[in-house]
Length: 148
Image 1 (tube, rainbow, N blue to C red):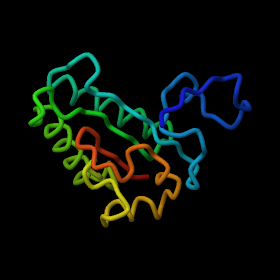
Image 2: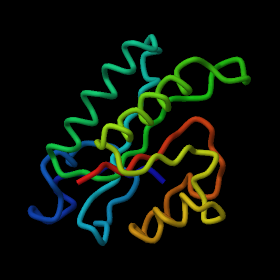
Image 3: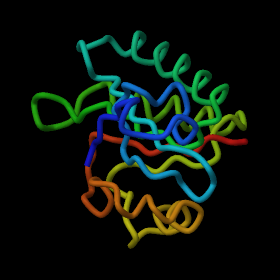
Image 4: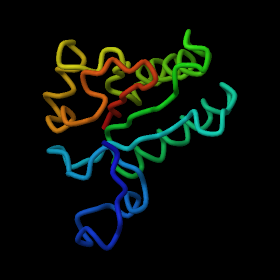
């Protein structure tokens, strides 16, 4: 369930400045003190290279702002058999993991309590279980936990 955060509906110090006006995957503060930010990379139908550039910018921005969880929406492809954007973005994320910028990458198909990655993520961030895509095997998303 995506929620639109309005500045007037939440006490001043409970929401970081970047969260006002953004679509978040939850309004509650995670136990670790962070939000899960949703980044829609398929918006505007970018090329693979444009999406990779935007991903790098968004990862750097999230790290600077103290966000540790990201939901990357890359889509699955309009033909129903998968596109180019999803695999390219996942490959980039796995490279960021090897570089030490990303702690955990959970592909949408494995974002569930039935998988090792899903359980590990839910153990560190219990409220992630309330996410609309948890246990849905959505191939159009990837969940990323940034390294601290």
